[in-house]
Image (cartoon, rainbow, N blue to C red; front, side, top):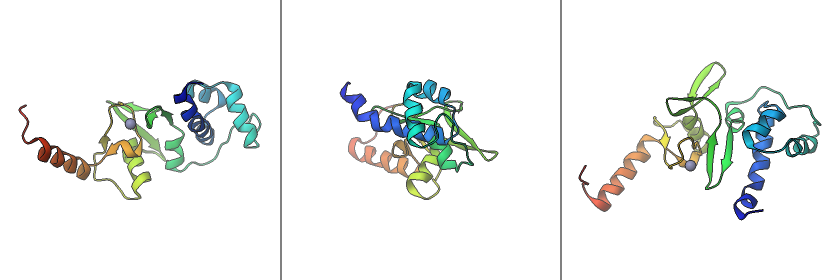
Length: 152
Ligand SMILES: [Zn+2]
């Protein structure tokens, strides 16, 4: 097994578990996470559910975690709806920016929006890779202090 996959193996098991909790069918989990049905049924069996999926009312955080995949580099890839390049989450009849939800999960406060990607992976919604308005201003000030005005 390549080293990257060894590092990701526990994350893949976590992803499978979160997707099953998020009411994704075993077949959907296989497709979305690129795993075998045996991988999924192993986890279902370990959870005591055999081949039956786990279904319940989900919190927004549970739903968020059921729609992402850990990828190399610490990124969290959004697998659900994308509107004009922005990962979007629909929960309880409301539409949310997935990165805003991620921000709240990581900081326990609402973000000063918009929350934008802070890494080069277009659909990454990792909370620690998402940047709110005050953080963007701070980063811009640091760059300005380091390099001064840059010609455009
Ligand atoms: Zn990222």
